[in-house]
Length: 507
Ligand code: FAD
Ligand code: DLZ
Ligand code: SF4
Image 1 (cartoon, protein in one colour):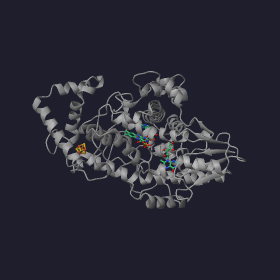
Image 2: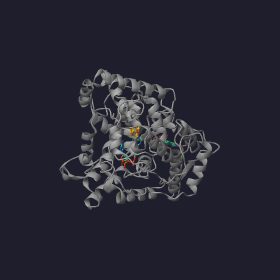
Image 3: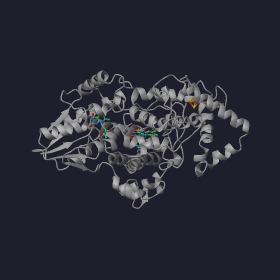
Image 4: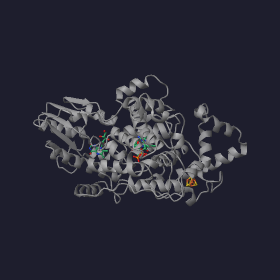
């Protein structure tokens, strides 16, 4: 018999490890293990979501006549590790072979490879670009650019293409996107799944076993079955996609979901497939239900960014997590865990993250990420935070976004310049500044928005590493025109602020 091992983020019946499954002889193994639930202290909602989705998936396989061994966290014989459970069940069933689809994390791949048994690791065909194909595309390029990779993915999948040409004549309609939020926007409610008995049992387990982990469970509403996830996809296409492009960067107080899709949880654990999401968006465009700028923007996130960061992860591991181009060393301040702060934008984003294990892209990038970059927070601490707090976080997608996109820790391999911005950007794209104790219009002084002086101080501090970057020519020229007094005021405000941050004072 062959033992088919399915990881918690491989909940797709089309997963390659199930190909050629023989229902007469083969068995499936799935396990909840303490090692995976606690190697970082994941958000409570993330654990509950994954355990519930795993239990539902195993039940569906069993209903379809598959012999499944499902190990719950509290099962007495549970060895607590993936390798331990594979070895245990391989022995129990006297398996001739164990078949698994390649995991999403280097750490797990190492663990699988440490097993002393006949193991076959198969390519994860849910991704559009295989790890080898990405390596071949990257070749020995010094810098990789998502835009060119994305065009290849459009050609390969023929999504949003008219033969050889992109639909509408352009590959990218970003210039039509990213409008500030309008007053009185009425954002549709996100999909809310009913909590069934399986989910309720898991919520109680998580409350009991992981009570000291960050996060709340009250608002649990995620889809936990493929059917529910498909419904969430339909709802996004019908109700939000048309405005996705326009409000992609917009942030509003008490509107955590905006016009984003909220599908990353399902895509990353396998309940949805990337290609079907992109195809459904394309159909909406072809039927006139959503404009091209929105549809192309959404498809670019999935065919472009998602595949691109995964390719970079496997290309650059195992060293990627250790890179620290800007030599950032500051510890993660307690405000990331919910300690009170007067900075309203940070406070809003952390509070929504705690409630929902979700924040949309621009909150992750331009608020939490921008602050981490400007304050010089250490990449390993920032990476761990992002891996913990978001229900869609697995290292293959989290690490390149954090080390590459927000912290510029890879020196520009993934992004052509650091996404550093002053308070003016946050003020333009949100209504956070209206309720803030700081004044976004003030550049210096005790009540000035800290993003304003931290932005210039970041450029000054990192001059030797960044001033040659052609995309930073303009800010460095502006800096060169500043008077000595202005520079001294920036350095003094930033120095005071960072000292207070380090001492744990409320900032
Ligand atoms: P939408 O805005 O609706 O986008 C549609 C889909 O596109 C997403 O579901 C996602 O699958 C994909 N996508 C969009 N942007 C990216 C991106 N930059 N990288 C990879 N896929 C993308 N995404 C994760 O899935 N897991 C993470 O751990 C994660 N960590 C991030 C950390 C930082 C610092 C930043 C800046 C981004 C991170 N992202 C991560 C990317 C992005 O923020 C999330 O995918 C998105 O917010 C999920 O919400 P959504 O499904 O509503 O996305
Ligand atoms: C994130 C996670 C958690 C919390 N628990 C489990 C688990 O109990 N069993 C499991 O198979 N996977 C779990 N995962 C996902 C893994 O930690 C890991 O991120 C992925 O399997 C990598 O592909
Ligand atoms: Fe954030 Fe500055 Fe605006 Fe306050 S004023 S919400 S700190 S950007």
